[in-house]
Length: 285
Ligand SMILES: Nc1ncnc2c1ncn2[C@@H]1O[C@H](COP(=O)(O)OP(=O)(O)OP(=O)(O)O)[C@@H](O)[C@H]1O
Image 1 (cartoon, protein in one colour):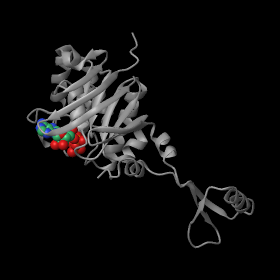
Image 2 (spheres, protein in one colour):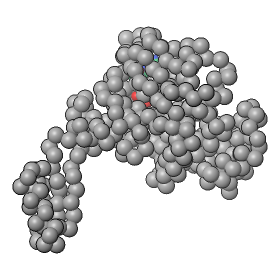
Image 3 (cartoon, rainbow, N blue to C red):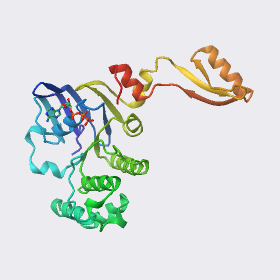
Image 4 (spheres, rainbow, N blue to C red):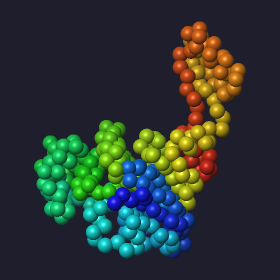
């Protein structure tokens, strides 16, 4: 049976004593979609993941993962979901291989998959190393390998590349895309707008526990492209020129193209960071 919404969140709220961490949050994530939760520190990203993975109960509202209410989780639920968070524990005194083997046995996963996954995340040569001796980037790749070992239908990634070097980030991004293409529903939190723009099919901009906007990154960039300008570089000018979108500009650009003077041209839509600032009045940092 195919489920339309792998994740469905309806008016979730969460309060801690005097703090409202989430307020009227609603969204859905479909199979084969990367949904980004984009917000600054303290905006409620981790709280959302904790509610959806059964680690916290919401104060109000309903949420369903693969059709099952998050308030009625049983142990079988964890056979279908994968979680990567900062607290994702590894057994530091076990080797890379033993860590995965342990979880493979727990989930009844064929042992052959352990080697395949180690190869995929680039840890084959380090399989005998103790998990406690891994670099941060290797550790995160092992955490991700462990989270997808049992081929979950839904994957929760809380800041999966935070603090990692560009090469490890690229490896992890490629793996996330591959999982998406295989039909996994992925909820990813980040405060990195470039990561969100590159990876996510849709993003929710989260500000102080509320969703301020929710759409495809490019749709948001076009919606808030209020200035509508082009940045061009022509052979005879020392600097780039910033031109408003207008019939005169179109004519002028056409002339430069015909005379071979136009060297570069870029549309100047805002970044997701700019959109966030416009929508919420605050930056993502
Ligand atoms: N256990 C808790 N007790 C009290 N307040 C909490 C608790 N957990 C979270 N909060 C508060 O709820 C709000 C949202 O926190 P949350 O960790 O979800 O934010 P976040 O967007 O994940 O931030 P970060 O990017 O720093 O991880 C914050 O104001 C935080 O202080």
